[in-house]
Image (cartoon, rainbow, N blue to C red; front, side):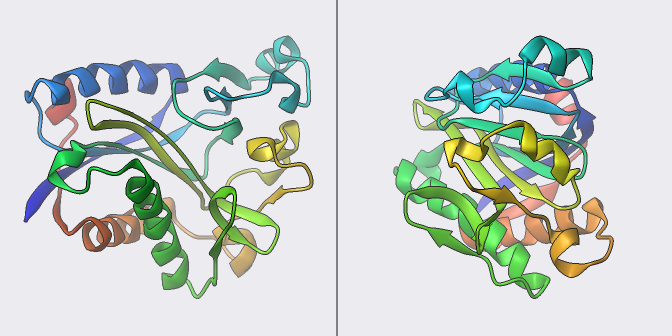
Length: 223
């Protein structure tokens, strides 16, 4: 059974996390790091994937940045998405040759992790054809956007635990007009600790990926 290190980073600005991912991705491709998952929150940020349409940002980027919402581009797939406090973000840095050499399987697996976490809370979420991520009705509960090179992964998933849902009105989520965002807290009508969801996500990840997931100190990626 493969071992995956789970690294909690707390709240990190998107650009800092992106630079860290790129460095770790390079090290993993050279075999200088084990498989790992970065677990974190972001400060408010709108990100544009490789196929993003800038018109899906519903506001002036300069004004958004002035109000504290960063706008950044990334090499992940997909359109426009939002990240912010109260959202669990997982960035796996994995060599898929040790799991499945299939990007389609990998996206499915990330969605499956979120579906199992939702089910732990009694939430019946599902997939919608042509709409990446997981959904509860017309409400998007979790997003997936990945980058894979040399079978090593970057970027990953974002699960809405208790973010400010009003911030999702700043974008057309993943380019899907009429789509809304929802969260575990909104669906349950109560507060849900992010740390608790992180623990459940770690367990779900272990089951879906057939791996032993071991919590690790930040020094694994900074030392």
